[in-house]
Image (cartoon, rainbow, N blue to C red; front, side, top):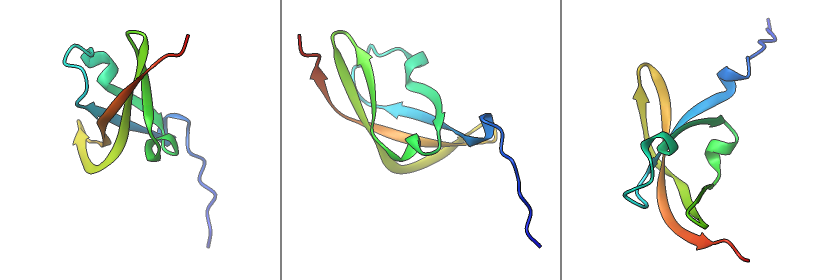
Length: 81
């Protein structure tokens, strides 16, 4: 017997925690919900005229019963003018 289960948009989201990078990167930008497919790729955050780059790590955790994915800072690039 197969069942077709519809998942809501929120259920397809993964809690992501960004670790490392600039010490003054606000905590509000370090935690976000992204689509599960995006949680397998690099994330870049626009910050002070450049981008902070984060890549998925093997670490995972939980926050209030939700699974989360940890991304570690790998570097930055400046925005070309």
